[in-house]
Length: 67
Image (cartoon, rainbow, N blue to C red; front, side, top):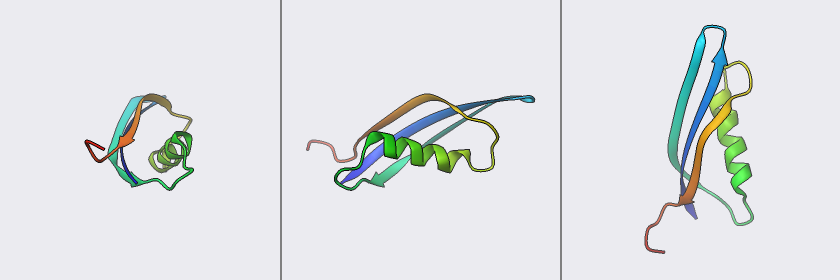
């Protein structure tokens, strides 16, 4: 099933604060969890950045309306 996600992360660095938002769709297999989705997205967005980000917003919902 396809799901739509939105994730906003914040990093505090010596040079200031960085915010990044990512949205899109993903196919989540039966048995998949919200935590799996969140951790995979954080890993993708954290690539090349330093430190552990703070999650400011996370949403994952079925992409198809009226189901």
